Length: 274
Image 1 (cartoon, one colour):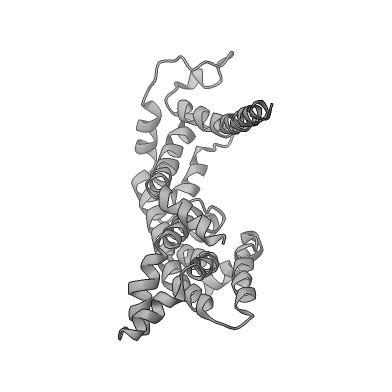
Image 2 (image 1 turned 90 degrees about the vertical axis):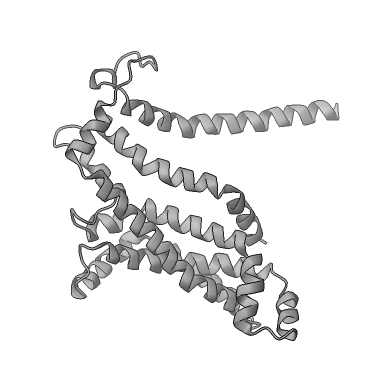
């Protein structure tokens, strides 16, 4: 009887997972197939997956839009933000983790609260600030603002990660003549590699998918792919084939990065939650 209940529970769990995957992946499948459909087949009724694929939509976006420039801007914003966030957030998280004061935990969660502030609430002040320092219309304005938000998350993530690293190993290195900086770079940082990778991946994804700040702070020469997707919107309708083709370049790079770092990502999340 117990085995039957366990089997039924397992079937129910796997069924729920499959149902969730179908719900989440069906729109993605539709968007992918739209990129290869002729315009007449996009809204064919009844809908079908059997059609003659075409690359016309891809040829069109490269003929009309500067996709390589948009892709380069997205890469520059994402990896520039990630590098700056890690440079600031990792040492801060380590310092909080090794701080013995009782308010260190509250301060770490205070950093996390900064990340929870809706971006739209800070858009106008940041816009005026970037205008006054003559950075409006550049990717550096987006990098600066995304770094402000992502560094707060990195501090909280690395604080939790470094707390799981035994400080006795660093004390042993100090006893053997290692400096504080040496103990950090040679002992603590390698042991915190999963959390470091998770923080980097989160920062890349958040910056890559950011739309609000780039939409208002960049111009035609500095906008990323997330903003370039708006080009599929016309005055009267939406060119779904164009959007599907652009979505390939917007989603495939970040999905490949996530798949490549998936093992470290999961390890970092589970360690950071302790």
